[in-house]
Length: 402
Image (cartoon, rainbow, N blue to C red; front, side):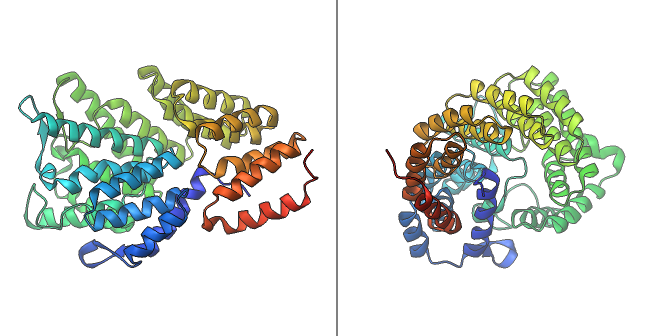
């Protein structure tokens, strides 16, 4: 019973669906009182999920400073928390709805606006790099109601907004249908040149979520081609409505979709191309590691985990990933070292001592295991009930420390 990042993310979505639910016109409301969310976050102060949820509550209550603080704490606790990065990206828009009206950034754009948009782009990019299919329901708590979003009107605009809103609350099949109708509203011969990139972005993501991978791959290939053309034409100006600024980002997303579609060899090739273009793109190493792990190609997986860490040594989550891969690859001695260092750099993350204790037992270090298990029990959020019971039972069976 291991506590991986993916499992935490799924728990987050499950709890969120109970605390914040769609209301009329695909909006969201709290169904758990704000006082309870605050109390839960205080009680489980080391729980990234609890901090993320209370942050969403703060956003709905327009308590933006507190939302920002809770999101940053969620990221500190779990550096791989893509949903928290995405929510943090949109806090400036919640604070200043006029940002929604900005379509491009030029030399005349006020510096404070440029900074806000740059922060937004950086955090949103981080979210999608961590998880290309990150949960977007937070947008339902932030985007202005229909009719107050600038950019258009009429039937097609209403369909587009409904497509967005259905996506944000997880109705991906309906979002795909609506976005397809938008694409079909224009002759195919004109679509490639004239249809905005964000339509293909949502259409492709919706298709990926319902596992219509051929459609998703077609859309992301088009976005990659567009980005390559744009880079040749314009190097300085960027448009806010374009989902991302560089072609390499789209190459990375295309690789992620290929991976999900089962085209692992093509995904590996694209990810290697990403790294040739940008050596700092450490998530590409993490994605490569995940592919190699799925193939049980452990030396390659470990190598990519190490390269990710070398590229971004400030991220303690990458140390945990390395330790986890080493544990599964059959190298528990090195795993103990990596997990020990991960615990030192991220002392409030309960998943690390949980795995360290298990790994320490494999290498015959019961004292280290006891210390790690005790640390886990001191940190573990209440939602880890089964793991808490399991570790208590293991502690009872451990020999007395020397």
